Image (tube, rainbow, N blue to C red; front, side):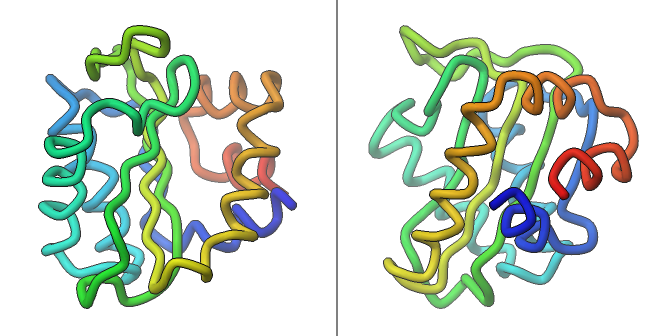
Amino acid sequence: MTLLVNNALGVGSILLQQRAGDWRECFQLAGNALVSSKRVTETYIQEMIDAFEELGPYMVIAPGIALAHARPSKSVLETGLSLVTLSEPVVFGSLNNDPVRLVIGLSAVDHDSHIDLMAALSELLMDETKVNILLQADKEPEVRQTLS
């Protein structure tokens, strides 16, 4: 299952030990990585920010982990993921899961295309050892090996 996650992370979609001042900058980083991997257009970044502003910090899905995403739209070119680790944790406004150190960007071309990917991602995020390796990683090959 983690291979599915690894394959969803295209070239340019992994940013490690980044600095961000707030959740918007985190979304910008995750969105830029999705743009770099040719999964979305730049418009999708604002769509993710708008979704968070509208719906609140439910996107902080587990302690220290945020899933930056928006609804399927014309700005999504391909279903995919980005992965951003933060050198310093960022508060998103989640009572139970702040602060965030891992931001995963998700793009989906439609409501069904990402179901298998979400299942694989859930399995990965429940593995505390792998999450800790991801958080400490400072080189992309280390991340790719953890996910393969």
